[in-house]
Image 1 (cartoon, rainbow, N blue to C red):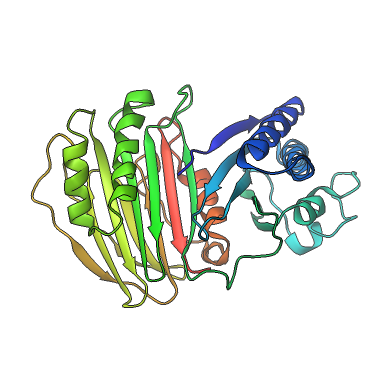
Image 2 (cartoon, rainbow, N blue to C red):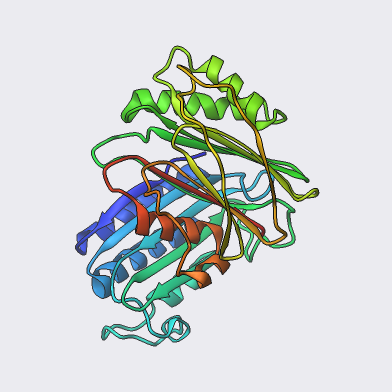
Length: 340
């Protein structure tokens, strides 16, 4: 799936850069001129809010490629900060309300101009904003349109690198969701070649079990740097998750906001040296949520102390976990999958 484009927002002129990138990505995704302008306006409003109310932050833009429903493509924007947060989020979302002496239209404009939006704010810890659009122009949430899990993602390169050495992919049908996360050895282009080849194996072999898929990846990556690879296969009908992992891609199952299980990976590097693979089976709760992340996020990555976050959109959850636990000196990927 597509890599996230990260835009640091520390002063006002950088909002213009976010606007330009958002408009271009919208056009490249297939949006018409009017929709692309609306997306550009949201990027501007989000950037302005980051500077005005939080002293800066970052915007992440990502093209979605069918992970929400068959054939549905689009664009997501995340605005993340560590500012003072909002005491009353609902009040701040009302048009005309302002704490900064402005017209108070920023958050209201984001709601109006997005097909979907979500917000999370904790006083003293910061705010996270999600806006989403779909290229078919439909408005309103996707609930009820697909039995698929909603999969949210952040996938960003190490600062100073042009491409991310991590990659991820998802395959879904009416019953099964399979998610693969690969962390190529090192950083940059060569690492990305290895991780993207692992994702290609997923899309070429969506019916394989996790262990068989990693075996296929191992053969395919032998001429590459190699990668850490984890695969989770969720049978939503049977309530079972099968997992196989090699290397330092971590995974955890939640039931709501409660951690139920840390999933077991083994040491090794796919493409170079792997031990005898083991496939583990875990119960998948009705309100289950899966979090997978590369070692660009801390091993302490968790929803502990943020119970209300578990009820937000999967992409917003991924954004907050990235903001809170990114090491800042590595490629970083976090995937969140949960029921719509």
